[in-house]
Length: 433
Ligand code: ASP
Image 1: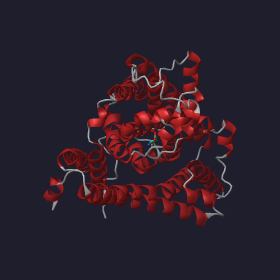
Image 2: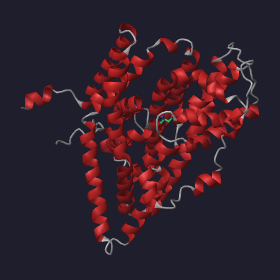
Image 3: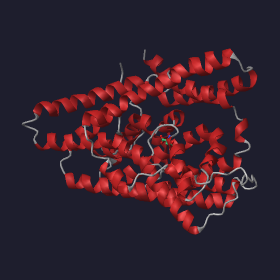
Image 4: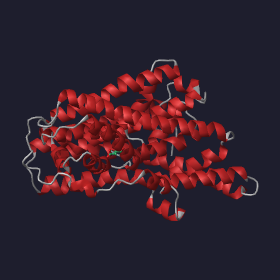
C-alpha cells in the first residue's frame, strides 16, 4: 500500500505531464489528421471541449462561494484590523505600481523590437477612432460600483468587487458581534471548511481538464500562426521575462532576505492552471493555496488574491503596451511621448476593469487603443495568437498578485518563515477523499 502510494506521481508532475501530452496530441492532430467532422465535431468541439470547459466550469463554480467565505472568515478572525488595513493599502499601491512598471517595460521593449513595422496598413484604416464609442468608466464610477445595490444579485452575478465588499462587511460585523451572531460565525467557518474540501475534490480532475484544454487549443491553431507574429510574441514574452527578472525576483529576494528559488518553486504549480485556463479568477483556489505554502496568512491572501485577480493585471498591461506599438507601427501611426503616457494611465485603469476571465484583456484593449486614436480594428491583426498570449499573460497576472501579497505581508512580518522555507507545495495534496 505504502509502496503503491510512493509510486504515484505527485499532482504537479501529473499536470505538467498532461500539458505536454496535450501539446503533442494537439500538434499531431493539427498537422496529421485532415480537417473534417471527426476532428472538429468529435474532438475539438466534442471530447476536448467537454472535459476542458467542464473543468473550467468546475473551477468557476468554486470562485464566488470560496471568495465570500474565505474573505468573510479572514476578516472575522482578524484581531488587529489596523494591521490588516495597512497590508491592504500597501498591496493596492503595489498593484498599481507594478502594473505601471509592466506597461512601461512593454512600451520600451516594443520600441526596440518594432513589431508590426513594414505592414503598412495605413490605407486599410478608414475608420480610425471607430472605437471612441467604447467609453471607459470614470474613476468615480468604478469606485461607486464597488458598493452592491443588492448583495444577493452581486453573488448571483459573480461581480467580484461587489462580492469582496459584501464579504468584507459580513466579516467585520460578525467578528465585532461574535457572541450575538454566534450562529453566523459558525456558518462562516463551516462554509469556509466546506469550500476548501470541495476545492480539493475538484483539483483531482485537473490533469484531465488541463490535457483537454491544451489539446483543443493546439489542434485548432497549430504552430503555424506563430511565425508572422513572432516579433509581437517576442516583445510580449521578452517584457514578461524582464519584469520577472528585474522587478519580481529582486523584490522577493530583498523582502524575504533569501533566494527567490523558494518562491518560484511554490508558484510554479499554479502556472499550469493559469496557463491552461487563461483565467485568473478560475485560478483563485490554486493561488490561495500557493500563498498558504509561501507562509502568507489566509486572513491576508483571502482578501488580496481575489482582489488582485479582479484588478491587478501586469501580464495584460504588457500585452496592451506591445499591442499598442504593434498596431501603431502596422498602420504607420507615430505616437508622441504624451500618447505613451496616456497609454500607461489608461492601461492601469483598464486593468481594474479587466475581469480575470479568458479574453477580457483583448476587449479592454480597444479602450486603450481609442485613448490615443488608434484604429480599434487593429485588434484583428493579433487575434490569431490571442489564446497563446492570454495563457502567458494570465500566468503573469497571477504571479503579480502573489508577489504584491507576499511583499506587503512580509513588511508587516506576517510571513510564516518556516513554512516559506519548507518544501510544502500548493494544491492541497494532503487532503484525501
Ligand atoms: N485572461 C486574463 C486573466 O484572467 C485577463 C486577460 O484577458 O488579459 O487574468
